[in-house]
Picture 1 (cartoon, one colour):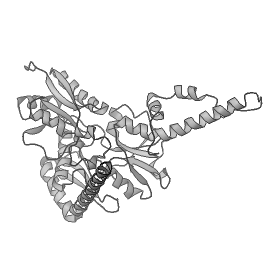
Picture 2 (cartoon, helix red, strand yellow; picture 1 turned 180 degrees about the horizontal axis):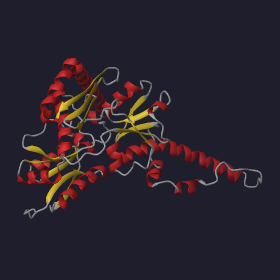
Picture 3 (cartoon, one colour; picture 1 turned 90 degrees about the horizontal axis):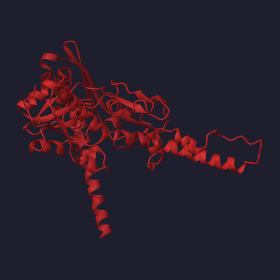
Picture 4 (cartoon, one colour; picture 1 turned 135 degrees about the vertical axis):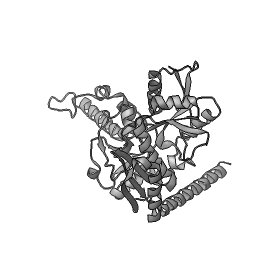
Length: 383
C-alpha cells in the first residue's frame, strides 16, 4: 500500500483519445492503491490545428508541454502516446512505465468497407502521416494522398461528410419531387423515408459529419487500429486491416508511456503499470528510430514482436514519394535486444537508409522555407 498522501498528478492532453489513455493508467494505479489526479494540458500540437505533424517544427509537438510540467514540478508524471514521443528526452526524465500495448497496425477506413486494392484510380486517401503517405504511394502510386488532421472522431467525420451530405441533397430533392406530385396517384417516391426521418436514424457521429464543412471529399482514410479501438469507433465505420509487412507501423504505435523524474515514486509506478514484453518491443523500435534519426520528417516504420527468445523486427525506410524503399525482417535476441537493435539500424544506414532519411530532411526544410516565405508575403500584403 502506498504511503504517499497527496495524489499523483498525471498530465495529459485533453483530446478524447488522450483522456481514454490517461484514464487507463489512472485505473491501473488506483488498482494498486495510488490516488491519481489527471491534469489536462493544451499542447503545441493542439494549438496549431491547421498544420500537419511534420510541419510542427520538430518532433514532440504533443509531448513537450506535458513534460515541461513534470520538470518544473507542477505534476509528477505525464501520459503520452509513445509514437508521438521524440527519441531524445531531457536527462532528468525517464519512461517510468509502458503499459501493455494495444494493436500496433493501421486500418483503412472507408464508407463502404472497400479494401485498398478496390479503390478506383485517383481515389483520395487522407492521412496526416508521411509514413502512411509513402506506404500508400508505394503500394498504389495512382492514389491521391491528401492531408488529414484532427482527433480520431474528427477524421472519421471528415471521411463521412461528403457522402452523407450528397445523400442528404438527393433525399431533399426527392422529397421536393414527391411534394410536387402529391396529387398524382401513380407517382412512386424514390425514398420511403423523408429527409428528417433519415437524419433521425443516423448515429451522433454521422450527424456531426452531416453538419461539417467539406474541404476534401475523401474516399478513404488511414488510422491506427489502437486509436479507433480506444475511441470506441471500430463498430462505427467499416475498416480493413493493412498488412504490417507492407504497412509497417510507426515506432511505439499502439503503446502508452508514462514519463516521470527518476525517483522512488517512478519505481512504484513502474511496478504497478509496466508491461515487460511491451517494454522490450518498444525499446527495440525506439532504439532503431533513434539510431537512424529522422523523427517524424522521414517515412520510417518499425515494428517489433517477441516470439520465444527472439524479437521479430520489421523496419521500413521509404522516400516520401514511396518510389524507394529499404526494408528488413530480422530476429533479434531478447537478451541483448537494445544492442542488436542498434546494430540493425547501422546495417540499414549502410544499405542506404541514411540517404533516404537525409533526402526527406532536405525536402522538409525546403517546405518549411517555402511556407515561411509565403507567410512573409501574406504579412506584407496585409500592411
